[in-house]
Length: 276
Image 1 (cartoon, one colour):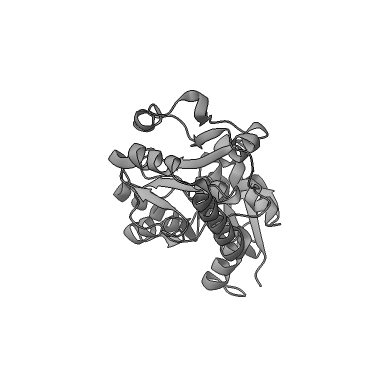
Image 2 (cartoon, one colour; image 1 turned 120 degrees about the vertical axis):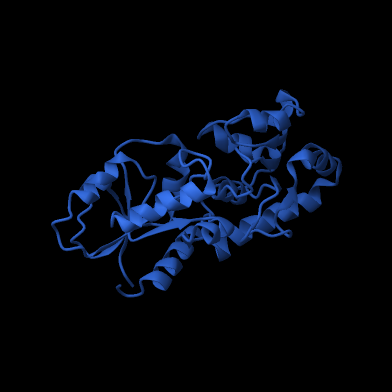
């Protein structure tokens, strides 16, 4: 099989720590973007995209043997502004030969933008379920105005606060439910956050999405924005054991069948095979 190497920018992004943790757990080698040599054969996968990627442009005089992939897990509402602009901006990277392909991890988003869909899986060592529960829910997200209009209906004392490891491990294990609210109006999944919740076996309520694959109604509950508070309160009033079992099913699905490394190797095999 073709060698797979991940590369990362010199600038550190806290929000990508979980992504790089999954890469490490899947035992892929990681190099610096500044050390990427496009004349070397192999598949090289990087994230996120920033100005440092000019290092690839600066090697235009070399024979191109590397197959370079941008794994874009950003949402269209960021600097791109809209789904159309998001797709155009990513396709331009291909036209300019900075990358050979762009992966996104929402199937509907991939279809609308004509980019390549890849499942962002989880890993059994990415987290472990907890027993004793002290929080009703956790969200592990930045509290934008849109999200805060939902979060405000749940007491701070019973909400597992947003934090980073190692404290986050304790909060996730002590939470009954995970709540996933979109940062913006686009109904696309948050693949990295869901992979985190899956590793901890957290029964999760998510705001409605266009296409939830590989998640389904057997492992994830969905509700429209206006009904999230009502639905979570219903779930909190139920016998928790049924929800605990759902969380375990999601963990099994995403850490075994759709394990991160398995999905990457499968995608590379589909797209490149032994060599392009």
